[in-house]
Length: 479
Image (tube, rainbow, N blue to C red; front, side, top):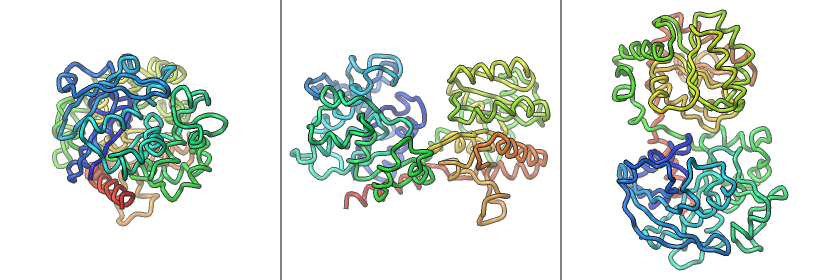
């Protein structure tokens, strides 16, 4: 089985979030199952010189973008047995970051078309093309409209994964002729609500549509979660499924992680206490082994449930011997809120505005609990990483959080002690507070808490099972 994974970002080359982690981990897991998986992504300006040194130039071609042709340099790199094709066009990609530019529709139409155009030049004609999110949703559209009957391209099947349905690539109809460049007779594939919707086109054309957790696949059939696409998805429900993301368990391993203060494992947990003390020192908090540390590593947006935290945080900090550590950046409202809270509770709240990868690992390793009160969460990787580091999640039971975190006292379980965290269902500040207080109640019982920590560290969120599910899906649509 030969798979081409088309993505706007992938670790270790460039990352803004969970999609890059998936694009960096899933192809490796597929390769371990003897599938040939290659990855196509842009050659962004921000890719490090060290990674650029691993690349070799293959060739250059031109790619149609509506009525014009644009240069495309093809660079190749191999990491962990996976071949990456990084596509160079300085007009589109020689800028900081990946998204948020006025011409994003054109930039990612170029990427989506180039992923198909390069195939004869890299001598890799896949069985499956796996596109991801709106930025590459045009790849299934282009294949259906322009390539399905082209010599050498016959018989390819396409998959589209929706990582977050909130972002759909909506543009005015003028992009059809100026940027997308498909025939007018096919324009209905992209038209939606009086505009052009790139994600809608991918859903229409892909042979299979997946989301990043089983619960999210069901949720996006509901108007509350779908951002307008629920009628389309309900009509195409026969090709929709949810496959839970995994994490790179080799990369996230407290027994071998060199960025944390001390190594540890479920069998030898002593180093966890050293990591906690180091975290308290780093955030200028009193070093106290028995004071529970609750952490958040998150985008500071209301979507992540921070509007639930605002009305209860001050009273919670006053009422409990507890410390809070927050790492993230985002909307000014929440940056200002946490900055003020740090000034008001300097002995109880530590804050880092921004993102720092090594620091995030030190937070995962040093905290006791990890709070994720998300309004919606397609999958969530942070709760899995937290468990890997022996940090107990407190989550809202939504999307992938529902699929990964269970609370023994509330969930039907196959055995009495099957829970691995704490959850709440209603999007309500006091329901969240109740879950936090239940966590503190168990934390006050050291033996029960250590048992909970060890159970969480024993959870298997590797890509092994999920990669097998993807392979079964590929085989099903290829049959």
